[in-house]
Every structure is written in C-alpha cells, then in structure tokens.
Amino acid sequence: MAVVLGPNRYGKAETRVVRVTRDGGAHRLKDVSVSVSLSGAMDEVHLTGDNAAVLPTDSQKNTVFAFARRHGIDAIEDFALLLARHFTASQPAVAHARVEISEYGWRRITGGHSFVRDGGEVRTALVHHDADGTESVVSGLTDLVVLNSTGSEFHGFARDEYTTLEPTDDRVLATAVTARWRHRATDAAWDDSYAAARDALLTAFAETHSLSLQQTLFQMGRSVLDGQDGLCEIRLSLPNKHHFLVDLEPFGLDNDNEVYFAADRPYGLIEGTVLTDDARDAPSAWN
Ligand SMILES: O=c1[nH]c(=O)c2[nH]c(=O)[nH]c2[nH]1
Image (cartoon, rainbow, N blue to C red):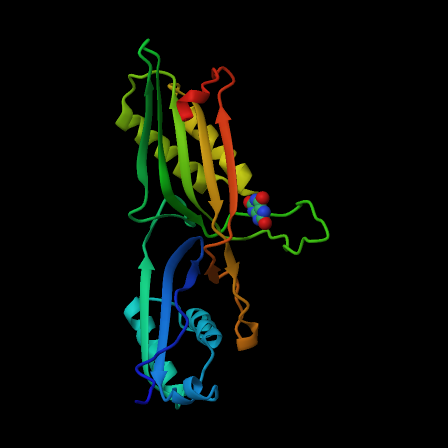
C-alpha cells in the first residue's frame, strides 16, 4: 500500500489591513482581515521539498497591503476578486485561489477622523449588598472599540539601549475600552447614566488631541466624572491596539498614512483610575 499526497492548499491567513482614505478632513476607514489560500501544482514541495512553485505566504501578505494602497478597498467582494485573479494570473503553478475577507464595520463618532466599531460593547454592572444595608454599585462597559485616524502623537519618551521606537507626530490611535465607574448612591437613573458615560467616553476620545494613550485615558475619565455628579470614581483599562504603517517602498509605492497593519498582540496596556478628590475609599466595591 502506497502513501500519496491528498488535497492541499496554502496561503497567508488573516492579514489585518486598515486602509484610511483621507478626503480632506473627513477620513474614510476600511478595516479587513484577508485570508489567501492557493492551490495547484504543489506536489514537489510536499514530496521533495522543491519550493520552485511556492509563492511565499509573506509575498501574499505584501500583495494584500500593496493592493490596498494601489487600488484602495471598496466592496470586499471586488477586493477579493482582484487578489484571486492576480495570484492565478501571475503564478503558473497556481490553478486556484481562495480569498476570504471579513470586514469590521465602523461608525463615525464626531469630527472627521474618529470612529467606533459596530456591534461592539458589553454593558456591565457590579453590586455589593451587606446585611447591614451597606451597598455599592459599579457600572461599566467592555469592548467599546474606538479609533482616531489622526490627532495622535507619541514622542519625548524615555529611551534606553533597547529603545527602537521612532517618535511620531501622526499615528493611528485605537483601543478597546474597558471602563467601570462607581456611583455615589444606589438609586440613580441607570440607563441615562450609562448613556451619558458612554457618550462622554466617546466624545473625549474623539476630541482629545492625544500625546499619549495615558493622557487620553485621563481626559476620558475626567469627562465621565465632570458630566455626572452622581459618580466619584472611574477605572479604565485601555489596550493600545497598535497600527503599524506598512513600508511599501520595496513595491514603488508611498504610504502617506494610508495603509496600516493592525497588530493584535503584543499590545500596550494602559490602565488608570480617575476620581473626585472627595471620593471615599471603597476597595470592596470593585471586588
Ligand atoms: O500612548 C502610548 N503610550 C505608551 O506608553 C507607549 N509605549 C509605546 O511603545 N507606545 C506608546 N503609546
């Protein structure tokens, strides 16, 4: 009985591309995950290790970024067709290309360059009640994903022998907000309070010209507390969802803050508490 090679395919999965189109002050955002899978005359690579027919998955990823710059991304069906046709046309060994794209929707917050991701957040509540009548209420949300396509800088930071990060005066700033806020009383208008806090978080994120995510964190926390006398403390956890500008120079393309690689990990994690100066300590409320 002989052992033979069965069906096979290969490609770069989940290339995360964010394409910003800058029509003056009003930016447009396209956020996609592209998975390419090629198949065809690939027997030799499996059987003998001859890679002559293998277009590296790294090249496939580069093609996705370069096409995003060169052609833009409109309907994902069109972008997928463009890529699939390209790989079969340019690679003699490739008989079939499978391209699958997922698109993440974004909604404008305010101004021209601030967005909140569709279908996002989860509202949370945490209550403690002691038999003696002592109560606390902490409200919050998780996974409120927001992005500013400009209006964010990061420079002037400490450097050591391991520092390679380049300072920037224009970057994408994106985070998935986890926030919890403590109420002074246990009889608030909860839905109105939640809506106001969510709105304050979004507006502060959009309207803060950011010098760091830490600075944005404080502005967001302050804005929630300023808007509601009934709140005395807010705790924020903000992952810095890094968007790296893709170097397209090897392909003869410039990249004037238009095509980004959206990395999922590692990420900076910026956490902090903002409170009113009369807030009494209540560590048990957060347990
Ligand atoms: O807003 C930022 N804060 C940081 O502390 C940091 N560190 C880093 O590498 N990038 C950033 N960005």
